[in-house]
Length: 324
Image (cartoon, rainbow, N blue to C red; front, side, top):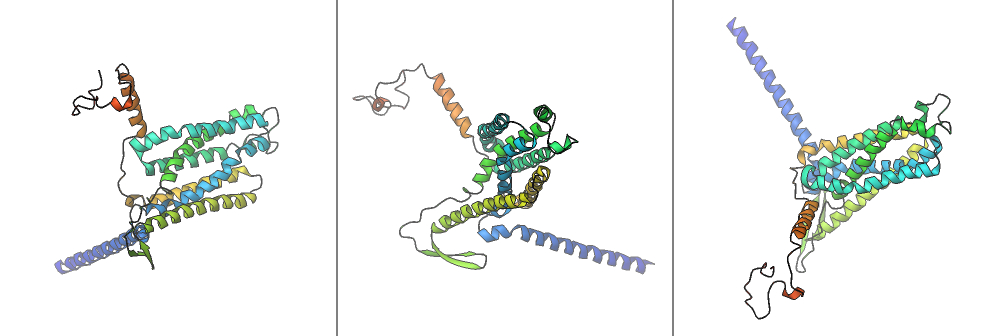
């Protein structure tokens, strides 16, 4: 009996060790797969480019949808041009104004990556609400509303909630998306006496000067982001032509594409490194204005050249000795 129990313990131990090895092998493979952008760009800070490029593509989809928002309001909700233009101008104006608050939140609280995640969630939620605000869900006689009841019925639809989410999401996405793409690499000027250096990218080797590689990489990032943005717009134009007048599918397709791009971005999130918060420029500007207002009663010299010293007097004065 003891020998049988010993064999069972040995076999269970071997099975457990085997499963641990398999699990560790899978984890190592997954980790290697997540690390391929870092190996491609030879810099952990630039590895984020390959992971968020899907969101740039989705941005192109949403550009086409938002640019045709007035068409949606005039052709399907039968709003007059004045009402539709007021709604579109309102969402564009609020989206541009909210970018100041977004910059404060990015610098002092969330950082670029968390703000990009939040904006993508708001965008997809807003598009889903717009998808369920089409007239066919509120009128039984057809896909268009009667002329007299259009604006009244629009008030009771999830259109306004979806539009509010799109405004906040659009304002939250502009700054982090631009900063993680066009400002991902900094241009370093090459010294005059610098020699050529060999650089390896994936399977290719290049001979560049010190600093020239950064300039080349920044150009690649710019053109790559522009290319994916244009591809998103072209895909939305030709893809939405197949939907014809079905705006429900247009909004849902854009929302699904945004969710897929967000999931792709989240795949590499554990390897992006720690977020680094910095003092907000708005906070610094506010403190400067407050300090200037508090010291407005102080008398300064008439000439700017006499702010820090008086002619003929001791030059080893403090910088604040000119204040009375």
